[in-house]
Length: 437
Ligand SMILES: *Cc1c(COP(=O)(O)O)cnc(C)c1O
Image 1 (spheres, rainbow, N blue to C red):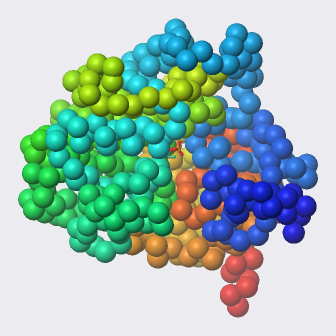
Image 2: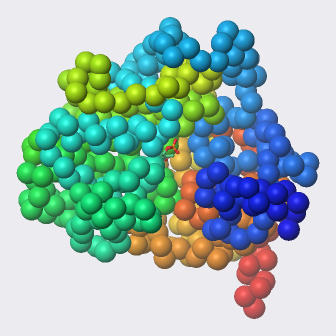
Image 3: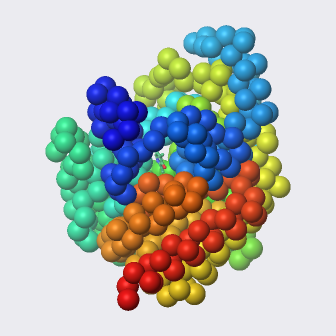
C-alpha cells in the first residue's frame, strides 16, 4: 500500500470523498492525481496518462484550459463570494436558455444532486401528488427519494438502495425497467392520479452509455402531458456534452428532420459541463413551473454558494468556448475511439458491445448486443473490464475505474491519443486471447 492511500484512509472513509474513486469496481490502489492539462493527467508519482475520465464529464475542453483558468483567476481576484446576484450568473443562465429552449427559466445550484432534488420538489408541489417514477440504472444524484433502483422487471414500490433512506422516502418512488414502454404505460394506468413526475436521464450514462430506444423519451413526455404529471429530463451528464443541446437536442433535430413536432421536457437538470470543473449545476424548465420557486412561489430552494462568482466564471468561459467546432471535434474523437476500440476487439474475437448516445460511449465486454436495461448491463464481464483497466493504466491510459461509466473524451484529445489507446486495447486483447489457450 502506498503511503498516500494509508494516509487518506486514516482520515477519509475509504480514502475518498466520492465512492467510485476508491476503485472498488476494478481493485487495486488508486494513486492521487497531482495535476492535469489538456488530455493528460499526472498522478502524485509523476506518471502521465491519457485521461478518459474528464472529471466524470466536466472537462469537455480538456483540463486546465488556459482561457478558463484565466477567467477563474480574474473572478477570484474580484472576490470569492458575495451572496448576491452577479451579471455573470445572468449571462450563464441566458446561454443555457439560448442553447436549450425548454429551459425558459433557470436556477443555478451547486450540484446535480441539488438540481434533481429541487426538480422533484417542484413536480410534487405543482401537481399536489407524491409519487415519482424513475428507471432502474438511471442515476440522479444521492437525495433520498432517488437512491432507489429496485431490480425486478415490474413496477415495484421502491426499496432503498442505501442504508439510512427511510422506506417512507423510497416508497413514493416507482422504479421501472429502462426503455420498457409497456411497464411505463401500465404504471400510469394503475397509479396515474398519484404520479407527480417521471425523472429520466436523457440518455442513461451511469450504467455505461445506453442509447434511448426510439420514441421512449417522447412516450414519457406524452404520458406526462396527458396525465398531468411533470417530465424531468436529467441532462446533468449529457447536457452540452452528448451534443450542443444535449441528448434532447439530438432527438429534436432528428424529429424535425423527420417532419415530427419535437417533444419538450417540463423540467431539465444540468451540471458537470456547465461548471467547467467547478461546482455549478442548474434546474431549468417551463416558466409557470419555475416561477413556483421561492421567492416568486411557495417552493423553497436556496444556497449560500449558489451562482458562486468563481464557479460561474469557469462555467461561463467553458460555455463560451464550447462552439460547434469544439462539439464536432469531440464527436470525431469519440467516434474514432469507439470504432477503433471496437474494431480491435472484433478482430481478436473479444465479445463486446458499444453503447452510444451522441458523443458519449462506453464499451460493454462480454455482451454481444448493446444493452438497454440495467439487467442486461449487469450481464457484462466486469472481471474482464478490470483486467482491461489495469492493462491500459500500465500503458499510460486512465479509463474510468468502473465498467458502468462512459469513456469521456475532450476537445484536447488528439488523433494520436486515439491511436495510442486503440493499440493498447489491441495488445490487451492479444494477451486475453493468448491466455485462453
Ligand atoms: C453526476 C450526475 C448527477 C449528480 O450530480 P452531482 O453534481 O454529482 O451531485 C445527477 N444526474 C446525473 C445524470 C449525473 O450524471
